[in-house]
Image 1: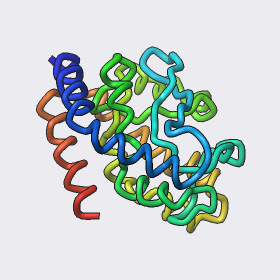
Image 2: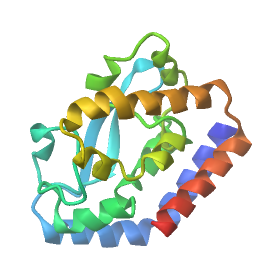
Image 3: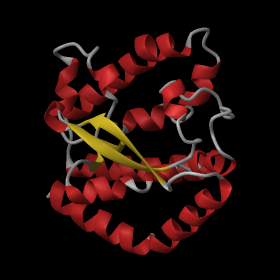
Length: 196
């Protein structure tokens, strides 16, 4: 049922949002040189790598200067990227990942291999389910960039505090998830975006 819902909702979403995709694509191209999409290797279900789609919100090559975005005005973020990220519009192309089966609408957010390699055997259980576009940890840490900006060492703070708490939340989801809970998380995500 979850997979059928994912296919239906993501397919419908891609169709309905195609005009918005076109507007965002033009805005991104006019704002800075480079591709419209940013494709990053993330770790998915079964500990397998896949390429995650996002609208590009940073200057080309910015990922080589660090994987963590710090603060609301990271200098690597483009002008259009600031607004695209603020309203989570950069995440919309992940509907493609959902449609083809790499991801689900709801599930633990996929991490990069660098951080997954630090997981304990118990934490690796988050890879028993498809990663998602949203989850409870994403809602709780929706202002993560601002939180990291206040840390003396953002990388260490993410690894030792934020990532550990996200994994705890996601392990609770893996142990007790349902279609109804997924719908609740989707509703909570929309509410968080609208009220931000």
